[in-house]
Length: 141
Image (cartoon, rainbow, N blue to C red):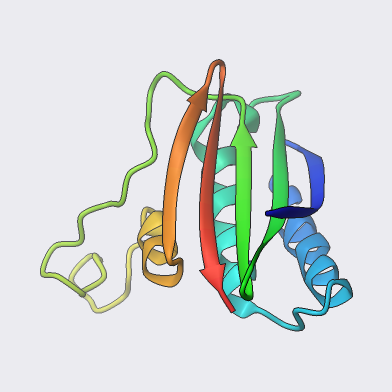
């Protein structure tokens, strides 16, 4: 596995689109071209890190790393400042493939990021590296 790039971003909402843009440029530079799937998992993992860990508090930071696993597989790792209150898990969706909502056919906002990651990635997981937590996924291009 070859690390193509790693970045430390401030724990702010603007770091999500900024991180996504960094990865888009990195993938293009490394010859992978456009990859909407990789950009989506970057968005979801950064959003989760900022919303569910100390990284989203004032002064917080989040790290983003992207690696070439070979065979046109890209690994994305997001390391946050940890949380005792939550662990990464896929949210159960009532009714199988239906998206939860308020009954009017409009999906509820939030809560499905790791479900998207699970469906897009060929694998994902997390590791506590006290006090930090790293969530990773691998996407085949």
